[in-house]
Structures are given as structure tokens and as C-alpha cells.
Image (cartoon, rainbow, N blue to C red; front, side, top):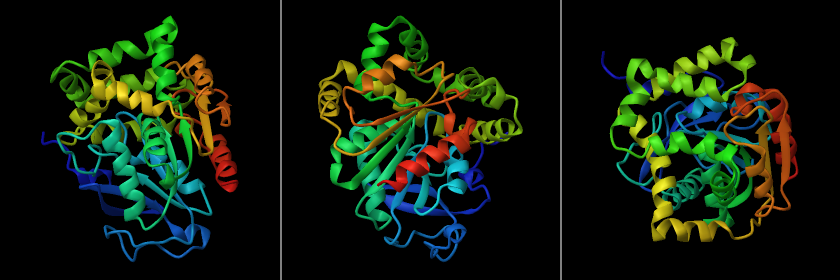
Length: 325
């Protein structure tokens, strides 16, 4: 069977699909339908380059490992009074999949470039897991372009590293999969064989039983399994994980971590599902050292994918956060 075409991620809904060029890469984004909150549309038709719209504040949604923009469907429908855009990160979904550029500096440059390409001077960044790392990096490396960050199951990278290396429970949760991903070729095959059954296994292991039993999960996992089989998507996804580990052994990784330890100067919200077995409370508590002014929220009965498992509760927290920006 032929692998899926990138067009499979252009799923219909109350949003428009756009292509935006930034930092030398073509990004696929889904923009919430402006008509839903009475604002002027950002483009005249689907699949066009976004036109500058600066009247409403820009919110950029950045997904996590193995995912694509669809993970933010509930936020595209539920967040109001802002220009809300969900991005397929470099290497994912309908975006370009270059062989390199999965380091923190380049990913931060991607996000800063997207803000400019969308016609805004700054944006609030919302990220889950790996997308949260991009939020942290962009806020430090391009501080003038970031108004605020909200991260979901994504502690400060230095806090997560410290917790994984000193706490046995966080280390057991995080390190085995990340270390398995460091070898060449085999992880790509493992992630995509049998119609990407491994991705479903991974998501089931990190999500709440309630969401796993729902129709929403069934629909979502069908889309996720298809999207990760787009040519080069699995390799790109794994390159994020490989850089996170390998960079720690190189001078660039140590320099990146030193930069990340600068005090955060913008408002921050951290959301964690109380039942998340992957990101544990200790790593979130250590994040307070780097963002002492931040707001820390737990979502009851949610796992690693709180924005999908408990969208109403997460949207309420995000809306409250955005209203005070």
C-alpha cells in the first residue's frame, strides 16, 4: 500500500488551511474560522498564504511528539477573541520535512518566522510536550516576539532534565523511550509498521482510560496513525528526540541549556494532567525555579494529553490566561 499523501491532514472543520513560508520552510497551518467570533477572515479562501491581520492578538498552537495540528481541534473551536493558528511543526503533517533543523535554535527561529509571516509583531505561544520546548526556546531566544507562553505537560527543559537524572520515577518514565530512539532506522520502522500501531500503543499508555474509551480518541488515533506514515514524518519526529539527547553530549547542547536558564520574562501558564504518567509532578515543581511568577494548574482525571482529554477545562484555563495578556 502506498504511503499517505500530506493532503490527508487537511481535515475539514471550522478552520481554514493555509501555507505559510518562514525560516526557509513551508508550514501547513490550520487557522480558526474568524467568523465564529465575528472578526474579519484572515484569508479569502483555503490553501492561500495568510494575509497580515493584526487587529486581534495572535495565538500559535504547537503540538507534541507524533502528532500534528489536529491535536488542537478543541482549542481551534473553543478559543475566542484571538487569531488562533495551529501549526504542523517542521517535519510533521503537511509541512516541509527537511533533513536537518530539529535543534532548539532552528525550531525557535521557525516560530519567530511564523509570527512575522502571519503579520504580527508578537504572539502568545501554546505548546504541548515537544511543542512546549519550542515555546520555552522561543521565549528565551526571541523574547521580543513572545507575549506569553502556555505549556501543557512540558516543564522547563532544565527542570525536566534534572528530574529525569535525579529522580528514579521520572527517569523510568522518560528515558527508556528517548534512549531507544537514538539508534538509526529501527525506531522509524517500529513507529510506522503495522499501520503505526506503536504510536497508538504509546498514546494509550500515556492517556487516561476515560479518553481512550471515547469516540474522540478513536477518531484522533486514526488521524495520528495516518499522519505519522506520511513519508519522512516519523524520521522527523524522532529527530526532535535525538537532538534532545545527543545535544547533551556536545558543546551546543550545554550552551543551549545555559541559555534556557535565563529567567523567563513573560507570563507563563503550565497545565498538567493529574494522571500524566510521563511528566511527573517533580519536574513541574522544579520549573518554578525558572518561572517563579508562573501559574501552575492541574487538570483532574487527565493524562499526558490534557488539551484533548479535558478540552473544556483546558480551554477555560487558556481563555482566562489569554484574557489577561
